[in-house]
Image: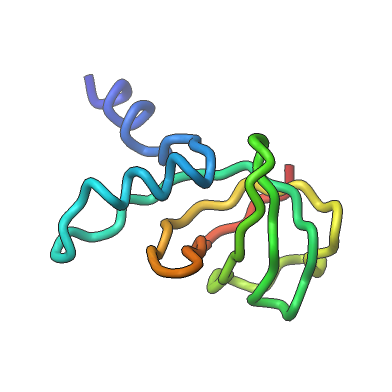
Length: 102
């Protein structure tokens, strides 16, 4: 039972950026943002913590990265698994606390 819970609850669900936005629309302001995993390709890098990415559905979105420094810098074309949550607003952005090379 414990192993099952760790396997099913230990990893955030893999979603598209639009699905991540949808999830935030169904939570209240007082609830913590749910972590999700978005697989994406870097399309532009503004700085080490600010980039644009495209998910598998073609949605392009801003990523604010606040995790530990990557072993190699983010570059356009790099495929990543981004773990974090969406901040609503205009435009919404993805706040990534982890970026794993794919």
